[in-house]
Length: 293
Image (cartoon, rainbow, N blue to C red):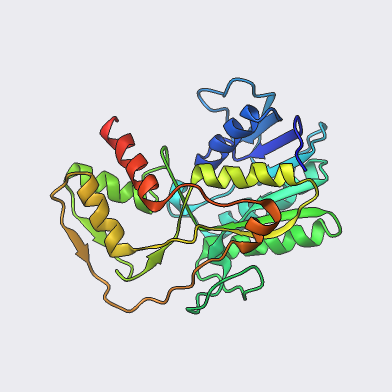
Protein backbone atom coordinates (compact mmCIF):
# COMPACT_ATOMS: atom_id res chain seq x y z
CA UNK A 1 0.00 0.00 0.00
CA UNK A 2 1.38 3.41 -0.99
CA UNK A 3 0.14 6.66 0.48
CA UNK A 4 1.10 10.29 -0.04
CA UNK A 5 0.40 13.64 1.50
CA UNK A 6 0.31 12.43 5.11
CA UNK A 7 0.68 14.98 7.91
CA UNK A 8 3.86 14.25 9.86
CA UNK A 9 5.60 15.73 12.91
CA UNK A 10 9.33 15.09 13.31
CA UNK A 11 10.84 15.80 16.74
CA UNK A 12 14.58 16.35 17.01
CA UNK A 13 14.36 17.88 13.55
CA UNK A 14 17.66 19.78 13.86
CA UNK A 15 19.62 16.61 14.54
CA UNK A 16 21.64 14.54 12.10
CA UNK A 17 18.87 12.03 11.37
CA UNK A 18 16.00 14.45 11.96
CA UNK A 19 17.20 16.93 9.35
CA UNK A 20 17.60 14.17 6.77
CA UNK A 21 14.16 12.74 7.58
CA UNK A 22 12.41 16.10 7.24
CA UNK A 23 14.00 16.62 3.82
CA UNK A 24 13.07 13.11 2.62
CA UNK A 25 9.45 13.35 3.74
CA UNK A 26 8.96 16.79 2.19
CA UNK A 27 10.44 15.50 -1.07
CA UNK A 28 8.00 12.56 -0.93
CA UNK A 29 5.05 14.97 -0.81
CA UNK A 30 4.15 14.69 2.87
CA UNK A 31 3.00 17.67 4.95
CA UNK A 32 5.84 17.98 7.44
CA UNK A 33 6.14 19.97 10.65
CA UNK A 34 9.22 19.96 12.87
CA UNK A 35 9.95 20.29 16.57
CA UNK A 36 13.20 21.06 18.37
CA UNK A 37 14.55 23.31 21.09
CA UNK A 38 15.21 26.15 18.62
CA UNK A 39 14.75 26.72 14.87
CA UNK A 40 17.62 25.66 12.67
CA UNK A 41 19.54 28.43 10.93
CA UNK A 42 18.14 27.32 7.57
CA UNK A 43 14.70 25.74 7.69
CA UNK A 44 14.12 23.44 4.71
CA UNK A 45 11.85 24.76 1.95
CA UNK A 46 8.38 23.29 2.17
CA UNK A 47 8.33 22.87 5.95
CA UNK A 48 4.77 23.41 7.17
CA UNK A 49 5.52 24.62 10.69
CA UNK A 50 8.28 24.67 13.32
CA UNK A 51 7.51 24.13 17.01
CA UNK A 52 10.08 25.37 19.54
CA UNK A 53 9.88 23.15 22.61
CA UNK A 54 11.95 21.51 25.34
CA UNK A 55 10.26 18.11 25.43
CA UNK A 56 11.43 17.60 29.01
CA UNK A 57 8.62 19.99 29.97
CA UNK A 58 4.91 19.19 29.50
CA UNK A 59 3.34 20.87 26.46
CA UNK A 60 0.42 20.61 24.06
CA UNK A 61 0.09 20.82 20.29
CA UNK A 62 -3.45 21.35 19.03
CA UNK A 63 -2.77 20.28 15.46
CA UNK A 64 -3.41 16.57 14.79
CA UNK A 65 -0.99 14.50 12.71
CA UNK A 66 -1.10 11.17 10.90
CA UNK A 67 2.40 10.23 12.06
CA UNK A 68 4.81 11.36 14.75
CA UNK A 69 8.46 10.42 14.31
CA UNK A 70 10.00 10.97 17.72
CA UNK A 71 13.76 11.40 17.30
CA UNK A 72 14.47 14.07 19.93
CA UNK A 73 16.81 12.78 22.64
CA UNK A 74 19.85 13.49 24.74
CA UNK A 75 22.76 11.51 23.33
CA UNK A 76 26.38 11.66 24.44
CA UNK A 77 27.52 11.75 20.80
CA UNK A 78 26.12 15.26 20.40
CA UNK A 79 25.88 16.78 23.87
CA UNK A 80 28.91 15.29 25.64
CA UNK A 81 28.75 13.91 29.16
CA UNK A 82 25.31 14.07 30.73
CA UNK A 83 23.99 12.64 33.99
CA UNK A 84 21.28 10.02 34.11
CA UNK A 85 18.71 12.39 35.57
CA UNK A 86 18.93 14.48 32.39
CA UNK A 87 18.67 11.37 30.21
CA UNK A 88 15.53 10.38 32.09
CA UNK A 89 14.10 13.91 31.90
CA UNK A 90 14.46 14.15 28.12
CA UNK A 91 14.60 10.58 26.81
CA UNK A 92 12.03 8.97 29.11
CA UNK A 93 9.74 11.70 30.51
CA UNK A 94 10.24 13.72 27.32
CA UNK A 95 9.02 10.82 25.19
CA UNK A 96 5.93 10.52 27.38
CA UNK A 97 5.38 14.28 27.04
CA UNK A 98 5.49 14.08 23.24
CA UNK A 99 3.05 11.18 23.17
CA UNK A 100 0.61 13.03 25.43
CA UNK A 101 1.02 16.34 23.59
CA UNK A 102 0.23 15.22 20.06
CA UNK A 103 -2.82 13.43 18.68
CA UNK A 104 -1.67 10.88 16.08
CA UNK A 105 -2.73 7.30 15.31
CA UNK A 106 0.86 6.29 14.47
CA UNK A 107 3.75 7.04 16.82
CA UNK A 108 7.30 6.08 15.81
CA UNK A 109 10.09 6.01 18.39
CA UNK A 110 13.76 6.01 17.48
CA UNK A 111 15.50 3.60 19.84
CA UNK A 112 18.82 1.78 19.37
CA UNK A 113 20.01 -1.77 18.78
CA UNK A 114 22.24 -1.32 21.82
CA UNK A 115 19.30 -2.12 24.07
CA UNK A 116 19.93 -5.81 23.27
CA UNK A 117 22.04 -8.23 25.24
CA UNK A 118 25.37 -8.75 23.47
CA UNK A 119 25.87 -12.50 23.86
CA UNK A 120 27.65 -13.43 20.64
CA UNK A 121 24.42 -14.61 18.99
CA UNK A 122 22.41 -13.12 16.10
CA UNK A 123 19.86 -10.58 17.31
CA UNK A 124 16.27 -10.37 16.10
CA UNK A 125 13.36 -8.46 17.59
CA UNK A 126 12.62 -11.26 20.08
CA UNK A 127 16.16 -11.32 21.51
CA UNK A 128 16.63 -10.43 25.20
CA UNK A 129 17.46 -6.86 26.14
CA UNK A 130 20.30 -5.83 28.43
CA UNK A 131 21.51 -2.27 27.84
CA UNK A 132 24.95 -1.60 29.31
CA UNK A 133 25.24 2.20 29.16
CA UNK A 134 22.99 4.95 30.50
CA UNK A 135 21.89 6.22 27.09
CA UNK A 136 20.72 2.77 25.99
CA UNK A 137 19.08 2.21 29.38
CA UNK A 138 17.09 5.42 28.97
CA UNK A 139 15.97 4.35 25.50
CA UNK A 140 14.69 1.01 26.76
CA UNK A 141 12.88 2.72 29.64
CA UNK A 142 11.26 5.03 27.11
CA UNK A 143 10.19 2.04 25.01
CA UNK A 144 8.46 0.50 28.02
CA UNK A 145 6.80 3.79 29.00
CA UNK A 146 5.50 4.42 25.49
CA UNK A 147 4.25 0.84 25.14
CA UNK A 148 2.22 1.26 28.33
CA UNK A 149 0.80 4.65 27.32
CA UNK A 150 0.08 3.75 23.70
CA UNK A 151 -1.35 0.27 24.34
CA UNK A 152 -3.64 -0.93 21.57
CA UNK A 153 -2.52 1.72 19.08
CA UNK A 154 0.11 1.68 16.34
CA UNK A 155 3.44 2.17 18.10
CA UNK A 156 6.56 1.51 16.06
CA UNK A 157 10.01 1.22 17.61
CA UNK A 158 13.06 1.36 15.34
CA UNK A 159 16.17 -0.24 16.83
CA UNK A 160 18.92 0.87 14.48
CA UNK A 161 22.63 0.12 14.47
CA UNK A 162 25.29 2.87 14.08
CA UNK A 163 23.85 5.55 11.79
CA UNK A 164 26.46 7.40 9.76
CA UNK A 165 26.77 9.77 6.81
CA UNK A 166 27.68 13.24 5.65
CA UNK A 167 26.98 15.94 8.23
CA UNK A 168 27.28 13.81 11.36
CA UNK A 169 28.80 15.60 14.35
CA UNK A 170 32.46 14.96 15.14
CA UNK A 171 31.66 13.11 18.35
CA UNK A 172 30.47 9.90 16.72
CA UNK A 173 33.04 7.24 15.85
CA UNK A 174 33.37 7.54 12.07
CA UNK A 175 33.60 11.36 11.88
CA UNK A 176 36.05 11.39 14.80
CA UNK A 177 38.33 8.94 13.00
CA UNK A 178 38.12 10.91 9.75
CA UNK A 179 38.80 14.21 11.54
CA UNK A 180 41.88 12.79 13.24
CA UNK A 181 43.16 11.19 10.04
CA UNK A 182 42.82 14.44 8.08
CA UNK A 183 44.50 16.41 10.87
CA UNK A 184 47.39 13.94 11.08
CA UNK A 185 46.51 13.03 14.65
CA UNK A 186 46.74 9.46 15.98
CA UNK A 187 43.60 7.35 15.78
CA UNK A 188 43.25 5.99 19.32
CA UNK A 189 41.08 2.88 19.47
CA UNK A 190 39.89 2.00 22.97
CA UNK A 191 37.39 -0.77 22.17
CA UNK A 192 38.64 -4.25 21.23
CA UNK A 193 40.12 -3.96 17.76
CA UNK A 194 38.32 -7.14 16.67
CA UNK A 195 34.91 -5.58 17.40
CA UNK A 196 32.55 -5.86 14.44
CA UNK A 197 30.50 -2.82 13.41
CA UNK A 198 27.36 -2.59 11.30
CA UNK A 199 27.08 0.86 9.71
CA UNK A 200 23.73 2.17 8.47
CA UNK A 201 23.68 5.14 6.11
CA UNK A 202 21.39 7.96 7.24
CA UNK A 203 19.57 7.82 3.89
CA UNK A 204 18.76 4.16 4.52
CA UNK A 205 17.51 5.06 7.98
CA UNK A 206 15.14 7.68 6.60
CA UNK A 207 14.08 5.28 3.84
CA UNK A 208 12.80 2.95 6.56
CA UNK A 209 10.66 5.78 7.93
CA UNK A 210 9.25 6.47 4.49
CA UNK A 211 8.60 2.75 3.96
CA UNK A 212 6.65 2.61 7.22
CA UNK A 213 4.32 5.38 6.03
CA UNK A 214 3.86 3.66 2.67
CA UNK A 215 3.15 0.32 4.35
CA UNK A 216 -0.15 1.57 5.73
CA UNK A 217 -0.87 0.01 9.11
CA UNK A 218 2.50 -1.61 9.85
CA UNK A 219 3.72 -1.25 13.43
CA UNK A 220 5.84 -2.97 16.07
CA UNK A 221 9.54 -3.32 16.77
CA UNK A 222 11.88 -3.30 13.77
CA UNK A 223 15.63 -3.79 13.74
CA UNK A 224 17.35 -1.64 11.11
CA UNK A 225 20.76 -2.92 10.03
CA UNK A 226 22.77 -3.95 6.98
CA UNK A 227 23.92 -7.54 6.61
CA UNK A 228 27.58 -6.55 6.21
CA UNK A 229 29.90 -5.58 9.05
CA UNK A 230 33.49 -4.36 9.34
CA UNK A 231 36.11 -4.99 12.00
CA UNK A 232 37.06 -1.93 14.02
CA UNK A 233 40.75 -2.17 13.13
CA UNK A 234 39.90 -2.55 9.43
CA UNK A 235 37.63 0.49 9.66
CA UNK A 236 40.34 2.67 11.21
CA UNK A 237 42.97 1.55 8.70
CA UNK A 238 40.60 2.07 5.75
CA UNK A 239 39.86 5.62 6.93
CA UNK A 240 43.60 6.39 7.15
CA UNK A 241 43.98 5.04 3.61
CA UNK A 242 41.07 7.05 2.20
CA UNK A 243 42.33 10.23 3.87
CA UNK A 244 45.84 9.70 2.42
CA UNK A 245 47.01 10.16 5.98
CA UNK A 246 50.11 9.08 7.86
CA UNK A 247 48.25 9.02 11.16
CA UNK A 248 49.15 6.01 13.30
CA UNK A 249 46.35 3.78 14.55
CA UNK A 250 46.93 3.00 18.24
CA UNK A 251 45.16 0.07 19.86
CA UNK A 252 44.92 -0.20 23.63
CA UNK A 253 42.44 -3.06 24.01
CA UNK A 254 43.42 -6.54 22.88
CA UNK A 255 40.54 -8.33 24.57
CA UNK A 256 38.52 -10.67 22.33
CA UNK A 257 35.21 -9.23 21.17
CA UNK A 258 31.91 -11.04 20.81
CA UNK A 259 29.90 -10.26 17.69
CA UNK A 260 26.12 -10.19 17.91
CA UNK A 261 24.91 -9.35 14.39
CA UNK A 262 21.66 -7.41 14.30
CA UNK A 263 19.20 -8.95 11.85
CA UNK A 264 16.67 -6.85 9.95
CA UNK A 265 14.67 -9.63 8.29
CA UNK A 266 11.39 -8.36 9.75
CA UNK A 267 11.84 -4.90 8.18
CA UNK A 268 12.68 -6.52 4.86
CA UNK A 269 9.61 -8.75 5.02
CA UNK A 270 7.02 -6.27 6.31
CA UNK A 271 8.33 -2.90 5.11
CA UNK A 272 10.07 -4.08 1.94
CA UNK A 273 13.16 -2.28 3.24
CA UNK A 274 16.79 -3.11 2.52
CA UNK A 275 19.81 -0.83 3.05
CA UNK A 276 21.23 0.40 -0.24
CA UNK A 277 24.58 1.88 0.87
CA UNK A 278 27.57 -0.43 1.35
CA UNK A 279 30.29 0.17 3.92
CA UNK A 280 32.55 1.38 1.11
CA UNK A 281 29.84 3.77 -0.14
CA UNK A 282 29.51 5.24 3.35
CA UNK A 283 33.25 5.72 3.87
CA UNK A 284 33.77 7.16 0.38
CA UNK A 285 31.00 9.71 1.01
CA UNK A 286 32.49 10.71 4.36
CA UNK A 287 35.91 11.09 2.78
CA UNK A 288 34.52 13.34 0.03
CA UNK A 289 32.82 15.50 2.65
CA UNK A 290 36.14 16.06 4.43
CA UNK A 291 38.07 16.54 1.19
CA UNK A 292 35.73 19.37 0.14
CA UNK A 293 35.33 20.93 3.59
